[in-house]
Image (cartoon, rainbow over all chains, first blue to last red; front, side, top):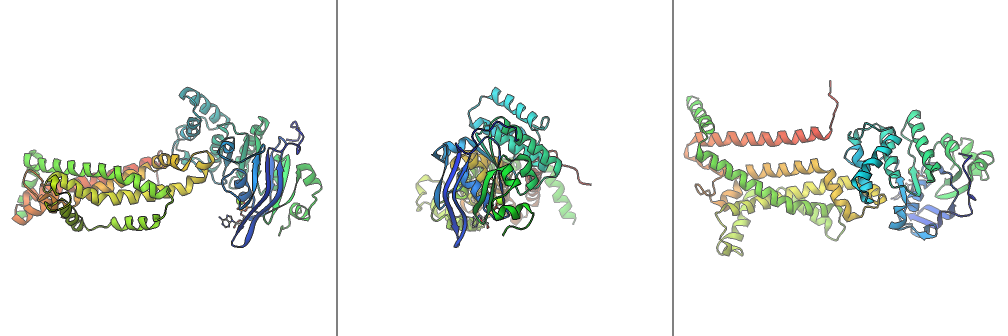
Length: 247
Length: 237
Ligand SMILES: Nc1ncnc2c1ncn2[C@@H]1O[C@H](COP(=O)(O)OP(=O)(O)O)[C@@H](O)[C@H]1O
Ligand SMILES: [Mg+2]
């Protein structure tokens, strides 16, 4: 991914979170002062379990609203209109109890595509995800890797500007993981901004253009991936890369 | 035992010869219960879906109430509908007491809570799984209802069949509001009760056999639906 054209990485953020705070039962689950995501390459969120990565991703996608602070996409607060230009893939794929093709048709229909156009688009997507020939299979009978591929295809079906992924490969074997990474990289090359959580440092090394390291609900460190991996600035970053526990 | 064998042979004769009286009773039963289930579905499904996805004060109470109504004793329903429809009742002017319509009303009261409660359960379970994903896809809460209903279609059909099973097998309510009038409001269950008490076991046995057949048909359909849902399910060794 390093050879991607870099458009002034952090000069023009497409997503920005300011002063985001979520408190529950007296615990500060999220406390992000100012986080700007820019550049065209994938941004990967790292951090131990419970660091607040999923919460932050949900805030960025507008699925939950923080107690305080704001999230903006290109300067606009996240609303239905912004969410239309985003898509999210969850850790466990949520597939409709319908055929593989019908899962894709569902989102295309909502975008008002005509029948013929939908059919052509579905065929193209299935081809891209290596699911051709499985169009009529019940989506919920797919294997874990196939199901996650379908979830990604469905997310990509509407050409989102930003694609959020929450540990999409955490339940998959290496081969299935590689398929998913290939799909993600292809989407990135076509210009989709990838914002993804992983707990796999190897995966972060393979995919990331930028890294955000989270810890205890806060951003411990963020910046270009090669800087982070070569010379982490925070103690949390050094400990995380050393394989030690970040507490 | 001799007597039973004889009665049973006669019962089979009634069924196989297409005895008009017998089949008129069967058809009336089917008509009343199918109509009741259709009406109950039209009321119960939207009600169940609204309870599942809606957020309004009194929702929890309504759900508890609905679950309690599932177990309504048929004779109590019969009594309630009787009081409503009797000459001095609020709906007395309609003169519906002792008509098939009265029986439909009673069965609707019995079946609606079943369909509504099962719909609520199904839709709520699916909603828990789908809500975030649908919101992410830009589907509003209201617009998600058809999706949830469609994806719960097998469970919902099962609910309809359960409602039909309850309606067609029920005797207490329909005998009170239908009156078991020959050629007018005699359905399978009420006829069985009456004819057995009169000692006319052949007709009772014939109707009982058909009723069991319907029950098996309903249960069979339910399990077939469940199997089809898994589509090309693997065969277990
Ligand atoms: N709805 C909630 N209510 C209370 N606590 C929550 C809720 N959702 C998440 N949390 C807590 O917030 C913290 C961060 O969770 P999460 O963002 O899922 O972490 P992760 O970095 O592993 O994705 C965890 O301690 C979790 O228990
Ligand atoms: Mg998480």
